[in-house]
Image (cartoon, rainbow, N blue to C red):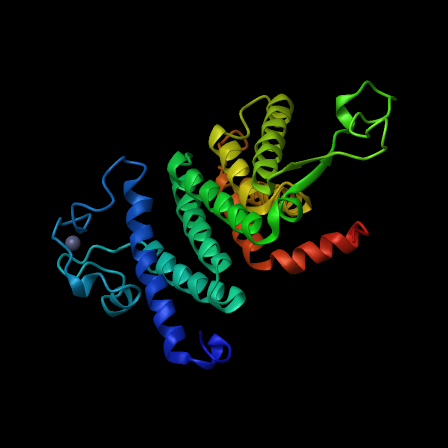
Length: 301
Ligand SMILES: [Zn+2]
């Protein structure tokens, strides 16, 4: 391990950013090929206009875009700003993860989940779908975090504790209290499992209610699956509810803005996945300050 914080090592920071930017270049490939069900490894990248195979010089993250001024150097076709933007964003997120979490499992999970959320952001924005594979990657990250938590803290400290209050008839004492000894039996469930149930359940409910109110589908099945996956990462407690609240507020603000600026019509479909992706990245990096703010708000311990 390094003696001292990573910010003391500028060369290492540049290297981590460069690795992130290179991964961002791969994310761009995913964004364009996943919805078309094309392979993300082959064929090699080509110019979308002239079809020339792109060489090493054309594929250096961020730098190629700056050197060739966002154009194909063979035919002059202008590329989208999205390529260098995704590369710079991914590089920044890599660096931020390592600075915030140090070299840890949490940093690795934060990187993988934010990369998936970046791809979800752009695919849902353009195609109004969220590929199941991306939700599955996020879900697996949540499970990995949980397995680590249970392995280091043990089942009783790492899992969520429930009292079996709901198993008896209303008004009767909880059956979990042993009538003879007075001992309370607790039910423990892994944090990620509770998160998946709360996440998917809450969004299913919102989707149903919004459908009734607006008389059209306000949220797709992909959004509900993403909510379940984010629940696995954030757990089913107030962190997840804060996440849901941020997504919904973002959705409302952006929706009103898009309609006010006449970018989308009132009847037009506005994808919800991008809001969930932005809220997810915010929660991953500012989980602790956001959590303590919410805890103070509700006077939680
Ligand atoms: Zn070209």
